[in-house]
Amino acid sequence: MISVIETLQALDINYEALTDLVELITSILTLLIAFVLGRQAFVRWRKDLSTCLIFLWFSSILIHLKLILNLDVAAIFFIIGLITWVIVFFVVVRIFYNVLNLELIQFSKRDGLEFHDFIKDSFGSDCIDAAINEANDESEKGWPGATHNKQPGKKKGLYPLILAADECWRPWSIAQKFVANAILNNGRTGVIYFTFTRPHEHISDQIINKIKQKNPNFVASSLPLNNVVIIDCFTPLSLKSSENPGSLKSFINSIFSTNRLRGGTIDKGYLVADPRNPHLLNEFYEKSLLFLKNKRCESICVVYDALSDFLCFTDEKIAIQYLRHNMFWEEKNKVSSLYILRLNTLQNKFFEEYLLWFANTVFYLEVKDGKPILKTRGLFSEPKCYDIDYNLCRKYKCLDFYG
Image (tube, rainbow, N blue to C red; front, side, top):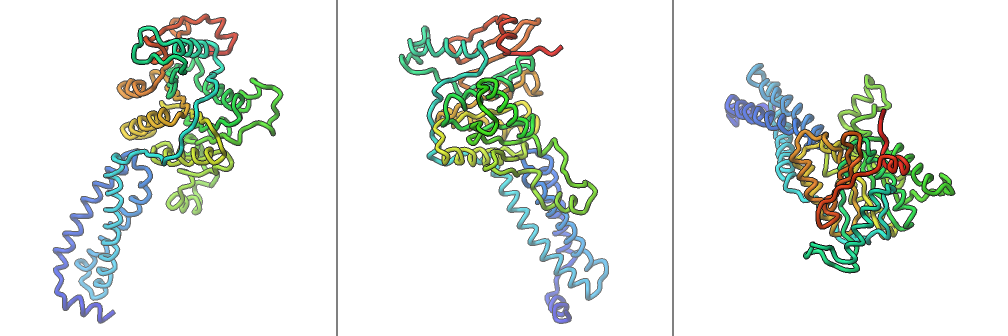
């Protein structure tokens, strides 16, 4: 200890200037960290940066002790503080490098994940299925008035598809019927279901109920759900932890554990992901695709329930980039993707229209003046609007009015 103190004295360090420099850099880093902590897209680094911020100021205090106490022992605290500060500084710089590159990262997926089209498209809703069948008939004959899309004998490119609906149409029920029909019509179909509105157990039960409604002969133990992966984006932010929030264990886990932000087991058919982190969702998406590919699934259907909830939680700009990439990738690799967008729920209407632009097909499902209306865009050579008989919809359970 004496030799360390003598060495410091021999170096004739200007402690005051060095302390001022550390204080200046620490203040700048604190402002930058505060900005990052305020962005939803950077949630993956919140715990790391919060911990770094504590150590930055703690080491800064140790460095200041040399000026305050002016004791020989304070030189030891100075060295400890300076070494700690330098280490944390480089950790923070590394995190900032990742932050600056985050929005440049492409949501790429590995090669070899091509799939085949569905044998049959069915949403379990007669009015939607009738419109799709009508479009397929026109596509086989060659679209009248659509010179760039006349491909006789070729099925209309339907996906990615957006259901832009109000709650009266129960779009989540239509999506689950779509999943049930895909499973029943083709045993080689895999399903990836992003849920932002319900925990994975509820979604699994609802899909099972839809399958039973379609084919009552199935029993729960024999239902073909081995090829279904549910990515639960509801639980991390909506359900309480089973631990006592006032316990020491809960406090320690809140600092060091990420179980609330990611978890689940793909072998059990579900993964848990924080919806504020699109890159984690993309990681789990690719993981699920590989899992289903290894199970020899030939076709894949993907459901996003719902985009509106996703955009409410995460950073909109990065989420839009993520969704744009996914829509193009799904179309290119023949993944049948269905996006639910709840009408009139997004604060920024620009993002709603922007998303609708990237889909191959859009179904607008609304109820105006007590009358259900189905409008299509991208399905035919020109947009079409259907006035739907209310009793017909009630008969086929296409929609369900509340009250």
